[in-house]
Image (cartoon, rainbow, N blue to C red):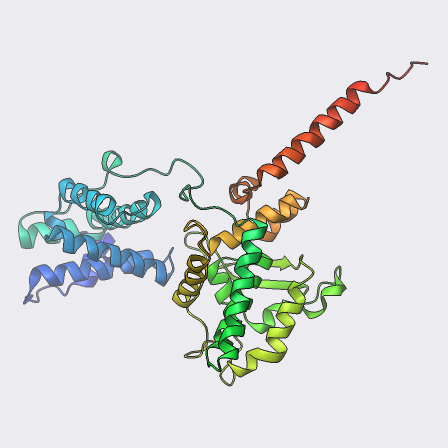
Length: 373
């Protein structure tokens, strides 16, 4: 191996001890490759992202039943077909699996890391890139969400919130302990919609993340929310933003939860806005399961997922006549085109907008011409 590569993170020489016999060479070389790949990614990716990629790589290893120096494009083709036809993976999910496998193969075939030489010396063959343009999905449009994903109508949203409140009343009237978590979840759904938040953004809120907005004093201590765990770009930390309160009822809902009920569920010293009865903070799985249970009980479309609350927030603001640029900033989108993908305006709104445009055009056409002096 060339000496110029000795200091690179993930280099074969750094992962394997030269001159030491391996008891299980195939398994040990593969694990050394995985460790090296992890080290190589640390400069640009977060630990959770790296762990997901490694998990997908191990899934492929189990499917292929061969090691990287034995992999062929046919192994990849069979796995991709299985993911689509058997497991029903969405296009975007399939691409994430392909990206992980492609990235690993790029790493092990790179001469700078020396794995090809190691494999040829120990196993008489070497790894190749098995994910190529012909067998991988491409990212051809900005939005890859499934067609059934949409926003709530105002009526559907009101029914959903009313049903969530009813579960609190029923549990409390029956003397059940679960009324307090149900109250928490009902409030959580309302706040996620109130600010157009993603799941993890909602889950990671702390009480201290709220503050006053000097331009909207009527909301008191809940005029702004500071999002600290926004969706991150590749290789970057979570993106922060501040979101202004817009709905008149939001501050009252928050104040009731924080001042009267949260302390009954939160463990000592907890700052989480949504504490769990079993831990410091509610889990994503609990949010998903509660949301799905309420949606299904109401007979609503399966396309109305938690992210539908964010779509609804954007849609309802636009229908209420809010400036699209303001909505874009509220959502933390860099481009207006991204915000437009969330907008699912109703046919009634489109009809009103068209009528307004036609009336303005007609009025301009009928306006008498100005006389020149």
